[in-house]
Length: 114
Image (tube, rainbow, N blue to C red):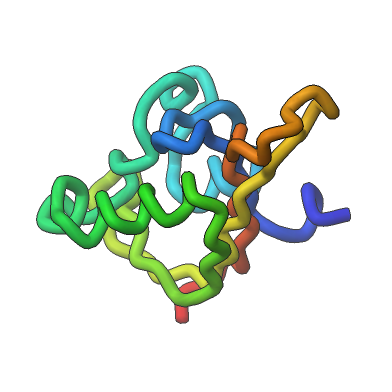
């Protein structure tokens, strides 16, 4: 049901995009083949994409911390939108990762501006 009603994507802990649903793609103006394999920072405002706060955010996600907040996202045409989102690290996704290492991060968001 989440796939139909909310924007969602999955990435590696370092931010490399693995997948995104049609809602996420429509809101930001992309097609999956244009973002898969690229870094999630492409959706951040340029002044935030390479900043220390962004690096700390990714490090905390890789350590298993969950974030729920309002986040600015840059659309393909350069506009900034705000989404209410939860970024949730996923550990042991396939049942073989006994050490608790984060394997991917799932983001689920309301796709309306805040």
